[in-house]
Image 1 (cartoon, helix red, strand yellow):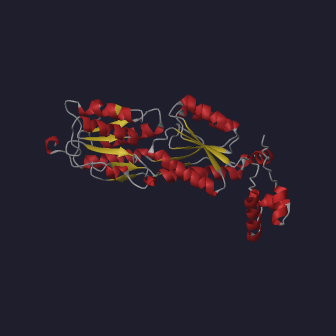
Image 2 (cartoon, one colour):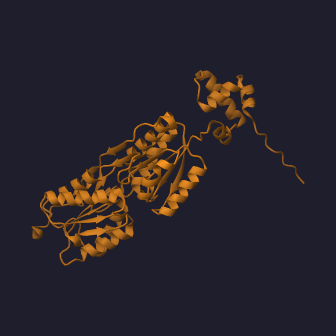
Image 3 (cartoon, rainbow, N blue to C red):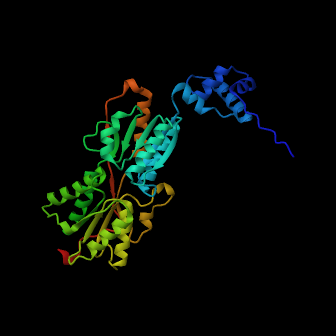
Length: 354
């Protein structure tokens, strides 16, 4: 029987011997805690590569009580917005020497709590969270020693750190744009109204109608759940009304795709019979193309700065980690602006509607 020789595991002492430096110098290069001359850093890294040496991060984390790892929990991997958020957060974390553990809650509160328990058990240094259970987060956020920064979704009267988009203003401007084109029968497909993003966008829609002295008609206000099927059902309900709306604002990307399916099945012409504005690009531009411009007609959207949301949230968390537990900075909520990207799915109201 052939004997398999066990591969030797090299130590920091072996790296120091090969590089011609002290063990303390190797440790300084590995941990980045001290300034080491560039030429010495190069020698140490070349020795590490030659020996295929990998630092024992578990042992280091037990020693210094840091894992240089942050956890990120999002509600939907299929959302173009959250993909862009992840890119921004991961880029910021990586540039600071941190790794990322990614979790998908699937918009399920119990799954989210399970993920948070796992992340805490793995002793991540901090957590970025787009919560699907805002009331639990608002109640429990101060009970953990692990810093948590929320993004996109924030509970009422939140006393922690967060990065969000101005959803009220975004929905207001989208609705106002339609009204300015002569639309008076404007419908809105909301997301889950227990989430701040959905309730704030609904508030923006209502405010635009109120400022234009237009009534809020119950049959034109639909409640979805941020998933495509609810956009489809809401769209079918709206388009089959005796007096269907001439314009629809849909409050996220996946629901907008469901709405477009309903428009197609009802053989409705967009924008001749109904104008449509969605929230978010259905597929992030980081993929190298923009699906909104491939649709016919090209889709008008409220585009959120997803990459910047993730980047700013990660930077906020990293700043908290630098300050340490006994030196936490004052709570802050960073609010970013969304932008209306006007394309061809919107047109002036049909003459018959005026």
